[in-house]
Image (cartoon, rainbow, N blue to C red):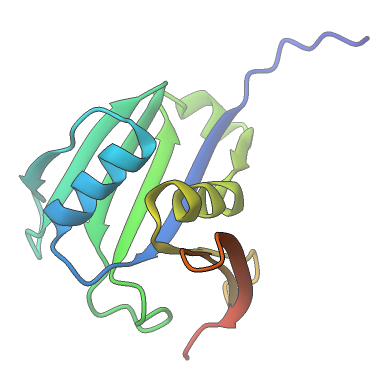
Amino acid sequence: MQITDKVHGAYSHVFIQFEGSLQDLGSKIEEGLNIPNFRYENMDDEPYDLVGYSEVLGFEVELRNTQNSKDWPDYQYLLGATTTDSFQEVFNDLMFDISLWMARYISLSCEVTAMAENLDKQTGQSFYFNKTTSQRESSIIEARK
């Protein structure tokens, strides 16, 4: 077994379909993922939107509105997570993208439709938990350009 001294970080960007408010979605995510409560603050820069922040298991989590998203207009929110203090990992290109896993996990745990962009930024994989069949459904979707 080879031992390495390299430290890796991780990040995810998950788009979420949800018709309620940012705070309502935040409550649903807090409960579904069993994470600490989000704190809500307005962004320092324009457009000064309300953003939810939380720190959990070494990740900094940000929940925000994606209004005016041209590529993914059916998804109203974005949940981003990045390992805390990953400056060296980002600089050294040692970051893992766990967006697909996170989108699937959020869809199951929070019973919302969640999507992660593929590397081509032209397609994404959408996950939905069907309450009627108790099955996870998944589909590939295309960005609207």
